[in-house]
Amino acid sequence: MAFVKLFSSLLLVAVLSWYRLEAFPGSGLDPEFYQFSCPQANEIVMTVLENAIVKDPRIAASLLRLHFHDCFALGCDASVLLDDSKNVVSEKNSKPNKNSLRGFEVIDEIKAKMEQVCPHTVSCADIVALAARDSTVLSGGPHWEVPLGRRDSTKASLSESNRNIPAPNSTIQTLIAKFSRQGLDEQDLVALSGAHTIGLARCATFRQRLYNQNGKNQPDVTLERNYYNDLKSSCPKVGGDNNVSPLDVSSPVRFDNTYFKLLLSGKGLLSSDEVLFAGNEQKAAELVRTYADDEDRFFHQFADSMIKMGKINVLTGSKGEIRKNCRRLN
Image (cartoon, rainbow, N blue to C red; front, side, top):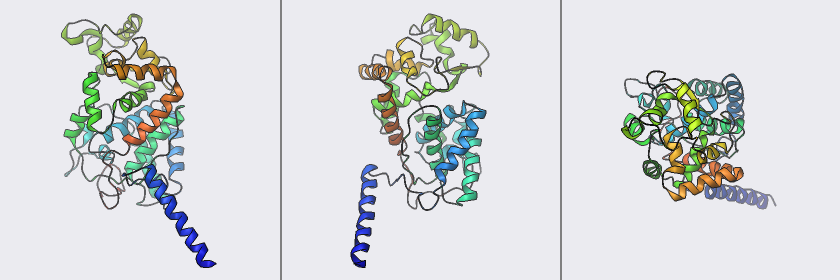
């Protein structure tokens, strides 16, 4: 009888392990990765974020963006967190990141608490992925099970950061190409762009749309007129580079589908937003309409696309390391 019970237990473990591998095929990741080694991991991330977002609601969007910028350079490996050092040229100095990427101090705080409770166990890469999910949830967006078990990179790539992260004035063709390079399709592109339902953008990232579209010294014709006039008041032709405007003018701190509704009416802040609908790419435009009409469908696809993005070129097993300090190598 004891042998039968033991066999049944081992069979159950094998079945559950197979199920988790089938749920996240080929990634080497598992939502239950820290179930025994650090069961408090999710709670620690959520507790820190609850306090951080109360102090600065914008930080939720910043942490979502941090995950995106990390995954698009080398993969989801926390390379974006590394500071300059003798052996590292930081990705923080790239054009998409410099004077723009935020949230590093929040990641530091989470990591410090993890090290107190579960020393040398939870990777910085997993912390970034969990922080992106919890920032979404705390802003009113969907929840998803984050596959875990990433390890941290022992290098950074300034060149990949500059080359792979789409610019705010990207055409729809460039966006599709850069997402495809990461194994993400057009559906992922439109859904993940929906992260712009929260957060702010600097004047420097959208000034060209107001004053010098295509070098013709005129505004982007896709901008709704009253919206255009409002933007001009906060983003002058000269100066004010760091003045900020909400990416979603209607509900800038709530994760919802309003972003897509605004695209339909010519109120996408960045050119890379508006081209999803006005860029003469039929599938992208249809997806914008779909998500504008159906928030649940957007939420479901956003969660699926975040899981998919979070598996880009991950380091698992004995690859990489578990950093003690997210800003530097061990």
